[in-house]
Image 1 (cartoon, rainbow, N blue to C red):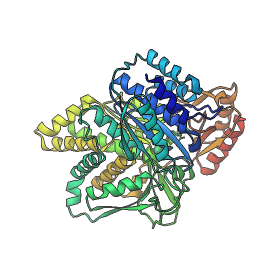
Image 2: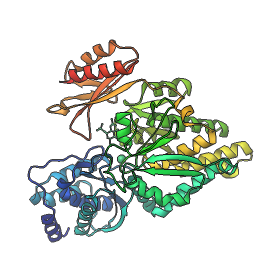
Image 3: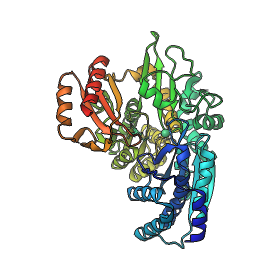
Image 4: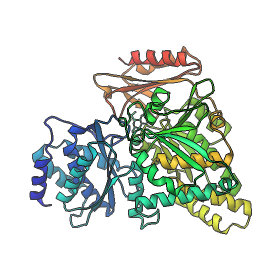
Length: 529
Ligand code: NG1
Ligand code: ZN
């Protein structure tokens, strides 16, 4: 390691005194003006990870749905997955090291992970549209160069685009071309192939209104639009030309407030969706004729996609197992519908995409979604090979057609991570193929009324949970108190857990009416104190 270079650059990216941060479920996230040293150090760490895995590693500068003043950073592992847990710990250690210890921490990581220092390193970098992102990504580059790594800066990209690019870089182009244009080409070809019969049947154009949260999604949709069939007409709102990122708009706002974002004009029954600030989440919604707002969240997206895939699987007649993965936040009605009506196995994991992703890998086809709209579909290697082979060779016309559609889904869905653009195209394709209106889709099942609250406590870590975060084991007596409260309401359920991204405890409650869900959530919040 070139000590001089590290020391020289470190001094330019000094750590504020006393600042302690943790690499959480979404990497590091805090006020942008506290992150310069973290960015530099993540540049250093990415080089070590790249040397160790002998692969290209991604570094994304974004704070997703957080306010514009915040920022964040996360590393992307070789196949486009989230960073391995042992390296999350290294990241935390390195970010919190005092200036004079940075070199020792790097040496320790190299030792523990058997990093070959002679190995070449390649890092690819992306960023969202926050005013602070450009400068912060320059600090990442300083870290990469201080350790002699090479880099390619893709500039403004969505988080899922960078995941896609990392995967392409490390699989010799098998996953697609490692350019943003390659991403558009791959997805749009799959979308056109999947929908061509229906669209060429003279279907009039289908309009979709998209709230882009004043973020990167708008820029990228504008670039992609001319690759897509004219019949799909996208109307962008909150496209970044005015308005603050994520302010009163975007997927997180719509999901948590269960109302329309600011800046979108809707007529009754028009199909709308919202992306979040880095375009890895999507939720749909509409206003009915009476002016009532209807949210179609990640659970309903998962239901739509898994019903469609299950039908195709039945047609190809192969014994491929499909499963759905959710978290404790999934609406009880969705779980019941999937298990009892669709007869699809459902699993619940801890909150955080990496847990869902990991579980979904156990199936031939694993569909995972968080209720907040982050999700995707994973196909096992065996399933993918089988489907591609059937699409080419199957003699039975009907079976071959079903296999070809599954093949298109494989190419349309971003298997590396949840992706608002890719998920949106898959949903639009399914709706057009099945001839479903947004109301019919919404009517598959009725959500149980629910409420999420945040509680500020002195130390959120005093709460410890089990059973995929659905039960509290600490502090003693809390779970019993929740159980007693839940018993007072019909069709009810409630749980508490410390947030992994904010300094709060989250409370979730469901019940037979909105009034009861609200009451239960409030009562559980009081029990947390
Ligand atoms: P926390 O803050 O741990 O609840 C939130 C979301 C997660 C996930 C992460 C990462 C909820 C209730 N929680 O986690 O689903 O998306 O952020 O961004 O939506
Ligand atoms: Zn996001």
